[in-house]
Image: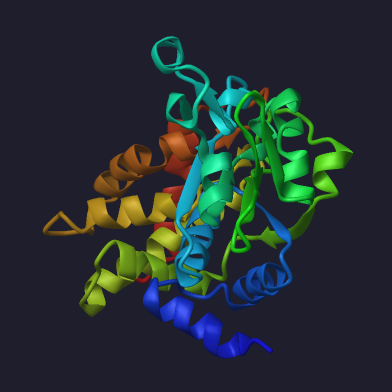
Length: 289
């Protein structure tokens, strides 16, 4: 039996992961019985970080594919190299393995980033590999996956541009793990760690910047609030100033850090700069800073 507590603590310590004990336990549990894992969560909640950490913990090479509407079967499986085929014929040396075939052959982790951006025809190429651990490459061979092969895919529920609805067949082959935003306390610890904040004054930056991104998630005019990256960027930028007492500096820097990380609802009269300014003013008014 797996000692989940020790395994989770080892991953957290080795890979500098703050929190996520429940989710790490779920991933380890799913991996222990050979299940394909689908991690669903908003942008910036740490889906890729957890996948990399778990793959490394199990000594599995990491084979990544970032999906888009242009992700075709050959991007996933592999392809014949025309000049090599002409000179050498249909032999293994002429074939360029894609991440799926490579992970199966070497017993690695296939990481499918934003699987809901993968076209349905490409999704279909995954089915036998996920279910039967078998992949047929025409004119070459049938691959039987090494025992240690496993798959982790991610899905961003807020994505709506270039998204393909996942079919029942492929969804049926995954177990589902949800990642929500972490608690304010854990997010502050992450900001301190990632923005390299050391003394007490610097650590106050973590508290204020976390409150700012929290407000972006609660603001009714904002469809998608900022991830933890927004707070890390804002804290790191503000930490370069000799003084952080200037409201103007906070507003200008927050716009730099957060402008690309929020998405407004349709039909909103205010623009992003105005909304970010409103949020910063509200937080600073109530902050003992």
